[in-house]
View (tube, rainbow, N blue to C red):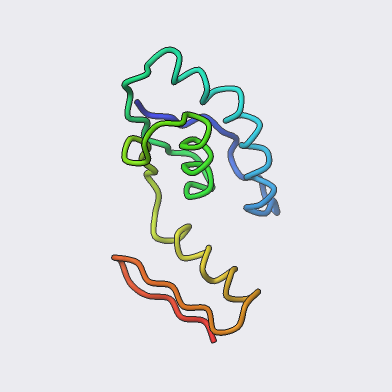
Length: 102
């Protein structure tokens, strides 16, 4: 099941602002999936993808392998870079590569 519910990012809007707007959308839409299609494997295609995939998984209470985020490496790379700015010597590995912030 493809889930593309959410607002588009506006000019000068931060990813965090977009997340807050799309959280409201997800809180109203995602719980309906569990009641209508309890055996579905939702494919999340809304931004910011990593955060909203996690939100969907928590709202659905499905096993983690049944909620899939269809994003890009760009959003995934933003997370460790942001975290690295807040902590010294942050190091993060993925199957796609490695990000190191000193």
